[in-house]
Amino acid sequence: MDLLAQRLDDLHTQAAALVRDAASERMLERATETELAQQVAAIAAFARLAEALLVHAVGEVARRSEQAARDERMTSHLGCRDAVELVQSLTRVGPQTAARLLRAAKAVRPAVSDTTGEALDAPFPSVRAAMVDGTIGVDGILAITDPLQATAPRVSARARREAADIVVAEARGEGPDAAPPACAALLKIHAQTWALALDQDGAEPRERAAERKRALVLGVASPDGVPVRGLLLPEVAAQLQTIFDAHLSPKVAFDDPTASSMADGCTADGGDALPPLPARDDRTRAQRQHDALAAALHVAASSGLLPTIGGAAPTLVVSVDADDLARGTGYAHAQGCDQPISVAVARHIACGGVIQRVTMQGGRILAIGTEERVFNRHQRRAIALRDGGCILPGCGTPAGWCEIHHVTEHAVGGPTHTDNGVLLCWYHHRFLDRIGWSIRMNRGVPEVLAPPWHDTRRAWRPVTTSPTRLRKRVLKT
Image (cartoon, rainbow, N blue to C red; front, side, top):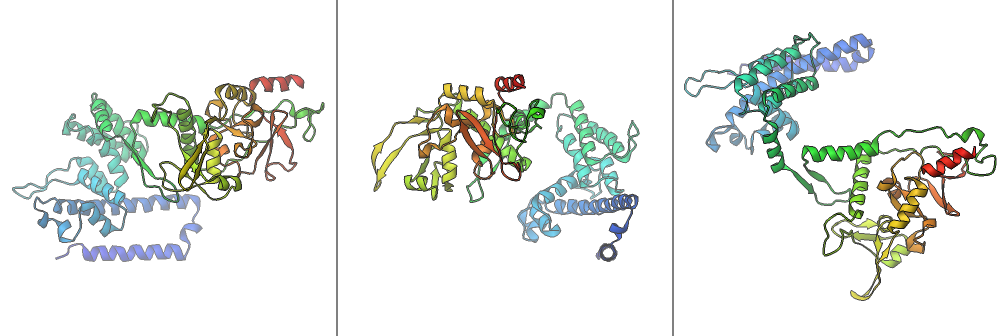
């Protein structure tokens, strides 16, 4: 006899009617802000109760899928590989959500005696009680139990339960400081704090586990890019985050003291034009982090400190047909990448690397040219002194993280000379042809022309972040 079917059907009918009425009558849109806040809280409370019932049911699914004999498992009876697949199929959620439901169920599911069939205590009784009365949902359950379970077996089950009791009190708004009921994020912080307090020696075992699981895998290249997956050690992730922060932190802009004495693009003595406004950056944070990693890889590869491959520094080999390069059409190919790249990308790579021309005919190598180093270290120092950093206004990427761009392309005969090289960050160098900015050299001084949406006056303006040149500009005023 199904003890829940009719009650669940009645509940489903009421909930469906409520959702339809709220949508058709625009109840939420007509509510005041106070009413809307109360409604959201009430809906969330109802959702937590629904989650409690779901977690309870998923726990029973997991129990029936843990039989020693595979043929006796519920998963086998319903044709599923494991409990995650079964829960995913029954609930229509993704595999990550299904796995979270199973983890939550394991933390609050009462054990069953093998001899009497009696229900025993759950691993965290107070967490289960808070789930049943709707105080916490799946997020809250995992926020409390995951950090504490990670301390087993170094910390006793009793100590873990007592710590959970204190954190549950915070979830109910009954903690020592009488703070309002804590959200899942705060509950996790409380649980992590207790875990660290109870598990004084836990860092070392966790680090050993992290060392075993560390990984970085490049997936199969697709037309959209190359997927990356893996696990970074905490300190490696922290170092990478530091690099991201250095690139992505808001730049501090100062008013140019010469601006008040300049008139519509020129100084009183006919010198430098008005400084251009900062360039607009439409990249998402994820895109900016990708570009920061690209810049870091460029710096590492050009540092001379990496191990050699075949007696030479790590070198990205790019091949392109000479006629395609001259026309700017067709494809190029990067060694180690299955997907072709555009000629524009090949030019970008060549701009800051080494070019060696190989003449082939019918598959036979006819001639091998010598390597042409694009800007040696002495030229780079001089250009860095002149430009200070990426020359596009508002970028702020320091010289050490920049690449050197040939204003007149090397492929069309542009000289490798300080009068033809400017500093650009990886992003502005890679996408210069798309972002609307133009660069020219005026007697060895870089000038930029902003796109129309950025500068309606369309004036060429000298640019630098070099302290020496900026100081000279200040003293001229």
